[in-house]
Image 1: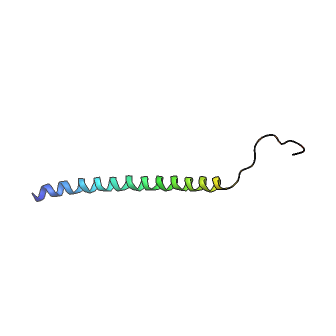
Image 2: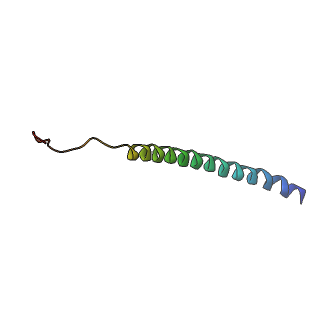
Image 3: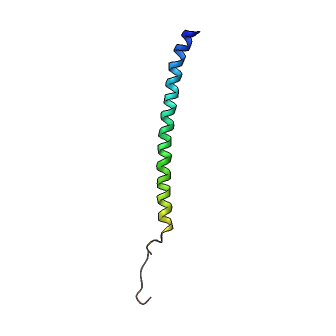
Length: 58
């Protein structure tokens, strides 16, 4: 029984480490996404430059 635990533990630890790495990568991607969204929302709040032809006299 103890020998089985020694074999299982390293493989389980390896799997846990792999899952943690994946979660960290996902956290970084989510953080980047929210950064881009917040920049987009900041720009949306500011009035933009008018587009189109400008007529003389108006």
